[in-house]
Structure formats: structure tokens, C-alpha cells
Image 1 (cartoon, helix red, strand yellow):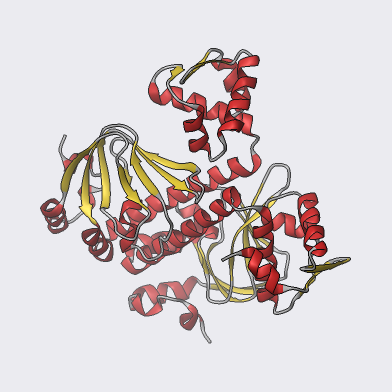
Image 2 (cartoon, rainbow over the protein chains, first blue to last red):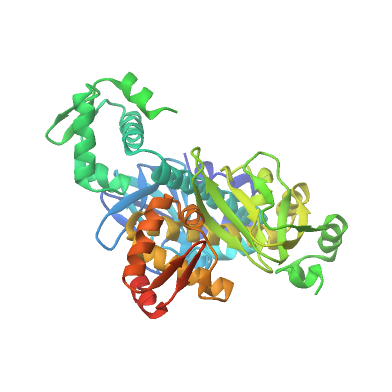
Length: 219
Length: 219
């Protein structure tokens, strides 16, 4: 599949805009662990994921993290084009969680296109609106949902994402995803183990009773 | 001042769009305490505040609240037009915190205009982006900032907003704004009183050492 088949609103663009995008779009491959955006004022541009997985997260001064959203195949990331959107001011980090292939439309081109193309202006509004909705949801989870439910949900989602109930993940890493301390995660995982929901071994968490985890998760 | 002088991007609109907006725009006055939007699927439309103050907040199942943002004179609220933006899906409440006068452009008209007008499409993207940025900031505060700093900041902002260091506000109300329990607020306010920063009387909080509160707030 080519760039134009991956780009969600390609057929809504004029031929002229399509040509200008193709002229400047760059294809890149990065290794798992690569930081694509580090909250600094410079930015890459709009990213369209071809394969792999990106993660957007916040980082506290003390080094704690919380995952805001993830980008998969055919997803578009606008956070990496924040430099051309003066109203998008926040320090977000984007890292490749897996080896990732993507296209980049440079930031300046995106800035120009948003001023010229109704399709791109509305599409970018939709993207930001859906991130906003996700963030509202996440905030509700963090503020009001008890941590046991959040952790059950996280483990089940990871299992679905990885296609296995045997997760190779450290407590530290889970804590980073959930914006909490490692000790909090370890304590809750031990409780889950005591309840027969998971089995803990060094560097991995096996989900042994997904039915019970699903009941705990509650939605 | 008339509607067109309050509307931020009026001069970027075509005469035809201006006419269509004026044809359907409605002027309303509501009393302090009125709920304009209650998270239900129906919605009013885009609100342009002429005077007064609106508050957008989340409400948990247990009745806890947290303030997301506020709208003042000349601000535009798009949350009340979420029904025409499928990507904006969340349950937010909007209430008038003071007697408020505003114009409403009905939701269906806003939906049409976003599809037709580049100026409106981009302006609405900017609005949502800035709310997104605010929400990111708020989430960082909630997750990573100690509660004493957040409370000092809240009190100082309220004082600036009300134009007085003698705040008529209950601990319950502060707790609702900050998404926490009343006991947590009371405990911290008593600590502040012990430190000589505030003086507590029934139904009010007097800021007696704003210098110290500012130092605590830290930014």
C-alpha cells in the first residue's frame, strides 16, 4: 500500500494539495525506543504510521510518566506538529514502542495546508477533538476510578495488544504507563496474585484468570 | 458592543456566512447556577459570552466535581456544540457561575459552517487545541503537583478573579473545584491557617499572607 492509500482523507484533497504533500513527504524507519518528540519547541511534522506503534506520554520533573495515547498503523499523530499550532502548547513525548515505519509531512507544510484546505482543517480538528475526549476519559479514570480497576483494565488491554496473556513487562514499566510509583503497582499485583488473577515471575505478568480481571475492570 | 464586535473572527467570514449566522443567533440571559449543558447528547450550540462567567466541569458518579475550564466575556464555548462533532465525546457540564449573558449559534448551523468555512474550521481547531493544552496542564497538576501548591494557586486565582482577598467560599465548593474531598481541603486550609497564610471563618477564607501563598504556589 502506498502513502495515498494510508492517508485518511486523501480523496478529499485537491490534486494540487496532493502533489505538494507528495513532494515533501518523507518515509522513515525507527527502532523501538527511539524518541521522536521530546517536548521541545522544534517539531518533525504530521506523522502517518505505516507499521509499528508510537506512544505519547507526559513526563514529570521527577521522571514519572503517564501514557496519554498510542498510535498504530494508519493513525495520524499531530502532536509532532505542535510547533505550527500556537494553541497546542504542552510538553509531550513521543516514543516508538516497537520498530516503526512512518511518513512525515513537514510541520511547515502542515501549517500552510491547514490555512488553505478545509478538509485538512476539519480533519485536524477531529483528530484533536478525539484526543481531547480520550484525555477527559483518562482524567476521570485517574481521579475517580480506584487503582485496582485501572490496573485490571491496563493488563487486559496489554494482553489484547500483544496477543498473549503472558506479558513481558516490568512493574516499573507499568507504573510509568499509569503515572504512579512502582511500589503501588507491585503492591496491587501481589494482591491480584493472592486473588488468583495473575501469576508473577521475574520480568513478566501472566494473566491466569481473565474472567475475574474482567469482572474487576467493570466496564 | 454588538455580536459582530464580540465574535473573534467575524472579519474573516464571508458576508454570506455573516448573514446566515446573524439570522439564527439568539441572545440569552441566565441566572447564576443555571446548568447550560449536562453531558446529555442534545446541545445548545456555540456560546459566545457577553458578560458573566461559565464553568465547565466533570462530575463523577459519586457526585465529585473537577473544574476543567472557565469562560469569560468574549470567550467562545464549543463544548455546548459537541453534538455536531462526533469526535468530541465526553460528559461535561457547563454552569453559569454568575448571572451570564450570551449569544448562541445553534449547533446545526455550527456543524454546517465548519464544513463550509475555512476560518471557522481553523478557529474551532484552535479553540479545541487550547482546551486540550489546558487539560494536559491540569492533568499534570493533579498527578504530580502536591496538593498544597495546587490549593495555594487556586486561592490566589480566585482572589484575582473576585477582586478581593476575602473569599466567600465553602470548603465543599473548593473541593468540588479541585476534584478532591472536603476533608482534604479542610485539613490543608487549617495547615495554611497555622502557617499564617489564611484566616478561616464560617463560609469564608481570607488570604492574609499572599506573599507566602505565592512562594508556596511556586510558579
